[in-house]
Length: 77
Image (cartoon, rainbow, N blue to C red; front, side):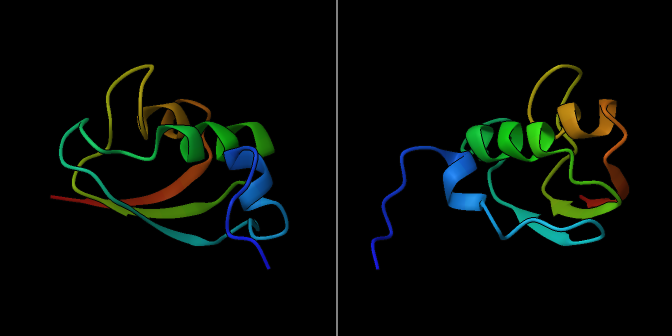
């Protein structure tokens, strides 16, 4: 089984489900999984619990999932 995918959406296919918990890496806005966040937003997965160093900013990072109201609970420092 290959661990190389053509896109973040392909890597997450069949893994995402409503109500799941996600731990997102990065520090501030550096090293965040931008492509994965965009794929989750596009998939429309909702009621997410997300843990990360921060909650992103307007229009970028986890802020995108907060804006689209896909995050039910956010835990961050």
